Image 1 (cartoon, rainbow, N blue to C red):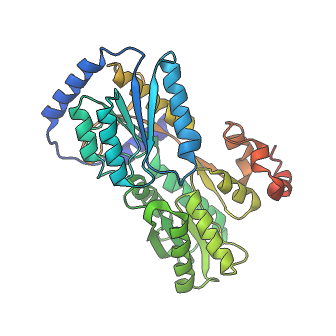
Image 2: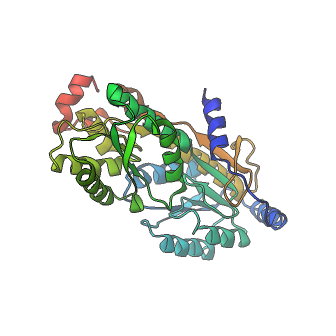
Length: 369
């Protein structure tokens, strides 16, 4: 089943490309490989993450990658970290700094997948291979790891229809709160969700939320409530948990009760607590450890001039680069029914972290421990 999910993901994300500059890129890779092959364990890995609004990057991705790089290099490898705080221009400067500091490889989670292309090209010209992390960056990247992003949307869409039950009909009005247009994953989430929702419900309002910010989702939701009517919204597709929080705040402020089902993604602590409390219907749990491990393994291999064949079993096409060696990680629908078997079992959170005084009664009812 895991291999099937991976195959579907790779196929879903592949796009038709026109070949351009392939001979030059091949030459660049050869030179980079020659240089990298001289490296031992004392490598320097540049890690560029896109923002700190979403809890996952600082809490999970960064420490997991750092830990794995240490393990793979006998504690000799160093991770040099920078966060762009949602600014593409800042991230471009950070790429330049990493090049100046002569890192041996770059792991980049792009703020803007198109804007980062020039930075990726500069890194390659400097002999620094680039791993695209979580978002499929454009430019001559050497490797890519992410989740099955179109499947995320399918999972969210299916869950919303399940939550609606008999209310799921073509006249039922829902709101779609999609992610930022600068994030290629947002388009994939939306595509997957629309494949499930179109024709089965009425998408009365749809938004592409600037910078994924909860406050922007909150404002969008206020506008949707005013336009549609608070009693006519039967459900809300939210692309992630942060925005779900802003959406639920807007619904409560408008006096909507009971709350309609709201989706999410990332299994953030606040999102899991809202699920336990019955305020948010679901989230998409993405096991960060396999993704971070794959990024670290590919980065270390590239820095040391080794093949990616044993790590990257798939190929994904970006809008600028064909057949990028890739690792695609499957996702899980998280509801109140499987909190124990997902985030608690995997050690993402303890029951004590989730079940604070405010949520203890709800946790007890669900048997969360």
